[in-house]
Image (cartoon, rainbow, N blue to C red; front, side):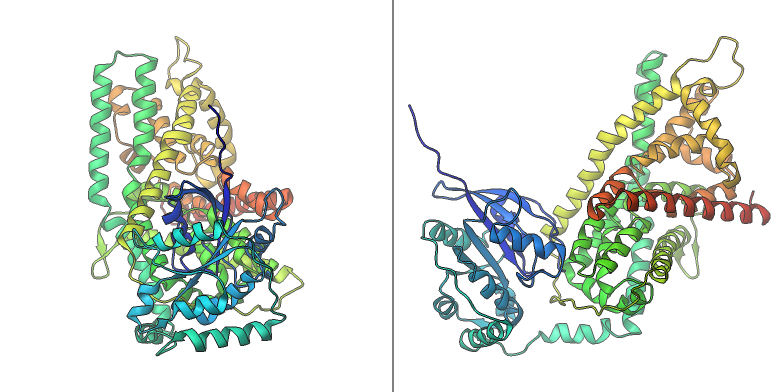
Length: 620
């Protein structure tokens, strides 16, 4: 029996940034790509599959947002090249879905006219029609369809069935002949045509919603707006400790119970040591910080969806310009609080090459979520859990200070880079302000689930592998029969740690810390599991080995050492994935090496000053 398979139809989703394109992509393909209410989330092509009711299969491409097919940034260039069939190894799409925001057609229709000129079968997706209706904006779909000469469908990307009409339109266009390319010469002609279409098909009582105007009067105020932003950031770091502590206590108790139960059921020997001291102690020491990471991400995701982030970028533009950046750098830098890798990738939306390079180089100074377990461990060991200044959590205040130190350092480094450059000119910020939205619970839940799974996959993957490898290095070779000290002193890792201790003695690091820093280059969270493994195996008896890591540190380290290690992780050279991202985005091994060596130098110098000053003040 023989048959033929219908060819895969290539479908490209394009549109201005923040039009809901990625949310529609998720609806069509069942993917869970990141969505947010600001420009620059999609900075590379994403691909999924759509099986239509007719049985036809589509390869759906989600392309970076673009304001024009005449690109001014790297992400816009990707969209242009893919739509025109110029992208290496990628054929031109068979159908283009141009997504426009029904509440902002004045801006979005102009791009749709450019896309129509390509001569590719096209469907116009009139997205967010529900929001437009609530504002009293009326769009005559039939007139718009007749004037444009392409199918116009209404979509609501955040609803379960919000893309049904779009699938029908795609099916009709996939079977239609390719239309001839059109040409509207010049920006003036495009603007005139856009105004004509708006006059014919759109009734708009006000240009912006009254609520948006009222909020912006306060949130964009040069004084009150900055105070509000500082208050929001302060609240986030207070909540990281106040809200997550009860769940962390439960995880800690569960880890301790599991270690005791498994340990009592296994005979003494290397396998018991691997499972209890290596795997359970190591991985449990990292998983306990999952609640704090989820609280942090809940706030970040809510701010992303609300439309507040571009306002923050405008508020900070003047300050960042003085440091050699622009307000457009704010969103990539904020993304770096989650992880520097997507933050570095999202710099593609920065048009100016100088600003983009500066943002890439300072992004690793933002306090990524992988540092949070280390901060939480050290703050818990050395900072008392009490309230100060009328009810503020002292540990939350210290965490807030560490994040602010990272931000201040990034601004200082970018300022220094600006002084060394010949071009010190300023570049004005042009950024679309999206409408405010109430964060959708489904998107928040998906975002938190994805971030939690990414963290747990790292725990179960690279952190598990490195924990086992570290256990091997800590356990072999075995101590000789006449050994008088802990067995770990005779192991491979013990010898390496003692050798490195001479280099790091001026900054107050003992040999156990030196061992933990090495696997921390692969993933920062591993530093915590490495310390847990090191101290479990270096104990002289079972009672000492069963102690929790936090009291071991608080009793065994000086305050000066704890503060020095905290400062080290503000600047410490990044994980290997971050180095790879810098190399890929800059195309330069030299810049990657300069970033790594510069951060190492900053970390060592800052820790040296911190340790020596703390010792002089009696904290040693």
